Image 1 (cartoon, rainbow, N blue to C red):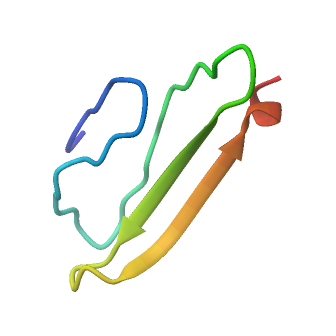
Image 2 (image 1 turned 135 degrees about the vertical axis):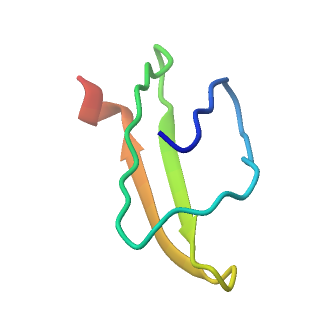
Length: 60
């Protein structure tokens, strides 16, 4: 594990570096009404690389 973050509400994490192969694992309990988890990944030049948005429906 490189970094672990926890909390609620909108958060910006500090920058961190990983090798050429990496993955993101998460545990998410959505609020009762609505809510999403959004993960944005940037490359080493701070250019946008990928965004993942998971709606509440993914979690049942």
